[in-house]
Length: 104
Image (cartoon, rainbow, N blue to C red):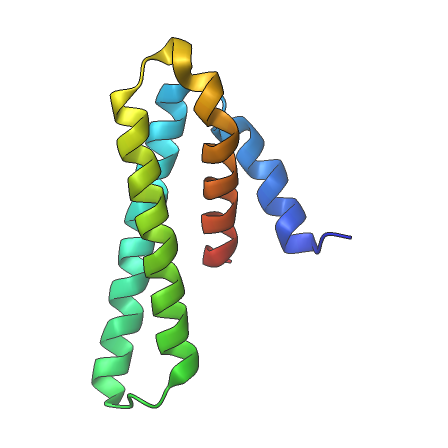
């Protein structure tokens, strides 16, 4: 059984990953949100001067991994034509949902 967070992500992201152009926009927005979150968390670690804060450092690393996955998928989407979108759409949806769940 899915937890409520996963279910919310699945429901909200269905409409976002419909067309190629909407998906590109959603991916770009999520990357920007992750950039801000990574920056904010990194600054907190620097300010606290506490490299032993493994929870926060782990979160930063997890965000960076999903951000890279989003960037790679966005690069693929930028190169493709709308008529080929359906072949990449399931993989894009999975990447988007996993990254969105990381932001919760």
